[in-house]
Image (cartoon, rainbow, N blue to C red; front, side):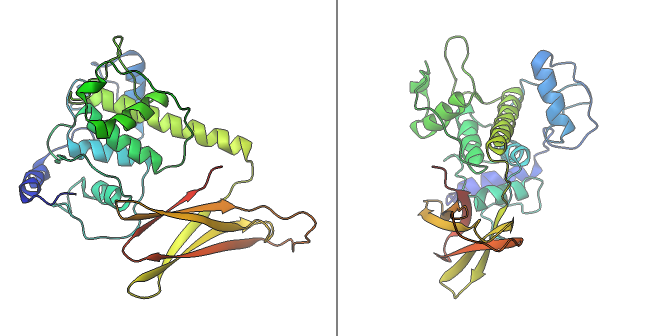
Length: 300
């Protein structure tokens, strides 16, 4: 992702960056935000995801750096890492290093010219955020195109992410239907979009739980077979009988070096007498050790 030595040196300068967006401070109201924005900021602040630049100033029009943007998205969406890797980023003990590791291990691609201490463009932030949202689950969207008046001014690679965030109502256009893709994203715009993303994910999962009252916890482990092959074991825990099984439906290999293992949850077959005992059901597949592993439920 970052093979250019010049970029690495530039990112190293990010080590000295002090991030007021994420540094801890006592929660309080800010005098420079009001209305719904004030409620959003206060909610995000109480959760420890954002902070002000001073005790009573949030600086909503202030700009967001690459390191701040990645850290905010990772923390608010609760993304987790998979395994320890050799980081391609400098400053491994810096406040942002854990978030960068998590992004890398989840196969989230950063913008081409991404640097830690430079401002993020709105389209770049949208690109990272949309990928992060997809790591939290599969969200069905209607097939519809939203006309963006200044869409031709943006980068084609990021346009799909912008479209999806608009359909999810996580991002919004202005009254002239502009997104301003190349403008640096402000602290308030980033906070608003991440807040909307958290709300979207939460509401979708609540609706799914209402439709599927039986809660399933599926975990996975990776076991080394040899230097070339790993065994991936998926476990569906605490089922009332062995009929509530699990199977690997397919495995997709993406360009970011991640093997996405899609699984299906099975229900007991009619007319079969299962032992009524709490059990863990399992499914196994084998993956090249070159790939990181991610599991996702296959939705019909």
